[in-house]
Length: 348
Image (cartoon, rainbow, N blue to C red; front, top):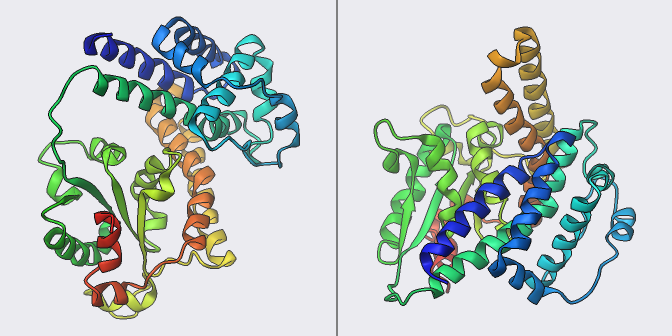
């Protein structure tokens, strides 16, 4: 198959997959049927799925025996994951009622939109990523190209209020990594009239994402939008590098040294505080939309509400990730010229 044909298939695939992953009500479940018909009728995809097939799974049994408010446990090997989730999609395509039944215990939220979105992100999206990677590899194999050693790309994610810390990190890494990596940063890479949203969405095209986690960061819609884009990748834990700030790091700020900059993610009280903050943001925006009382005039606010909903659903997982992984204080990183981070990016 030519690269041109593969590109057309890839475009169709991404379009249909995007429609499917956004479903949040019963009337949109038909997008799953359309997607399943497409992959079944596209030989290069259907043959790959068939090559991954090893056994028939009892999906209904697995769904009934998983924990409440938890996603179903997916197989680790890619071939088994493809086989498993394809059987889920095929079953829903034959019986749309299974979508509501299986997604019911994915989140404690009472809203079906949240349940459907959580189900799609946690269970169906990894399958979409696997097929997309397969198609991309097929395009690479479709032509002989000169292998060029490309520099690794590192996305610097931070809150503007922590610009002074970002400057310290950027200055050191840009110098130390100049020969084999580039640092993407908003103030440098978003030109006049260019879109900040497109820049944030480019995060998935980077090899690593270095996040500067502060209290400001965990209350910033844009920052969390960035990091949740990374979490769409099933293997995001291998991609995220992080610096968790403490109040001791306020010495680097121009304001008083008593500035409260620390990210309180290592205690239950701190995590609950951030979750409560976003719950409050959700209710405030929900009330604003109710005040407008006209869906046509509140389209943008409704989109923002969906983003905040996604933050509410995924923020606990991100904070648990930070809590469970050992970090290094900023002062130690500065003292070592960020050697720990540089070694990881270099692959040392």
